[in-house]
Length: 332
Ligand code: AHN
Ligand code: ZN
Image (tube, rainbow, N blue to C red):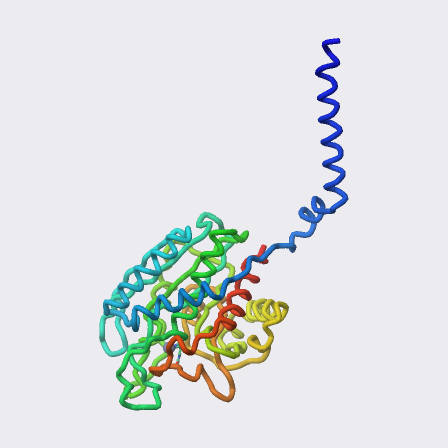
């Protein structure tokens, strides 16, 4: 008699377990999860959130190296990456500009899953240009720019991606690399040679001495001027040369998501930008998502005093942010 009391609950438990298992098999969830690894839920990029991160940077004023606004914004960016759970590295360096000015530069790196070998790097420059030397009004040619699109837009998208990563980690390790002193290239009026190496000083420094020894990643994606209304992004020339397959990967992802009106599958300009030096010095194949059109060239308010928040459109931030998330979460 005593034995039957223990036998009955055990028998019932076994029945429940069998039913549970057979139900799971009927839904197909078990086998699907194991067999087709391409099924990943990519989180939804929040464009309102990204917009706020763009605005927060612009609210500091022009982020020109050696200014208080630049220092304060650098602290803000490092603090946000920290808050979003990244391991944060600060690279401080004195970098010589084309005119001999020593720039107190700071690259800010936020690393997710720092111990993982399989990695992707996402880049954007966080400084803004010291002069609006492409402004239609010559009186503005010595005025620093707000760089809402040229600078803050890419960083705003990356901060939102950092926030998303904290909530749901992709399989690969992700490095968010905010480079400084991209936009200190020679003033338009400069009479000397206009060298490529005058641009992207922070990226050149990082690529020659990365934040960790033996650093390597599969590929990189650079965001530059990714916030303007109706922006178009073409295959950039150096990206085609050094990272053609990554260009296809990103543009295919964008088109699959329905962002084909932004991501045009045709070659556009060749642009001296951070990704060139990342490839040259660190051999990391990196593509540049940068606004360009055959009719208008770069962003219409590029290097003018009008590169402010009025030019920032949430729809473009969404197209770029969701596309980058699609790429990084689907990578195995
Ligand atoms: C040149 O004008 C050669 N390169 C521009 C790179 C850049 C500046 N991107 C944003 N601002
Ligand atoms: Zn610029």
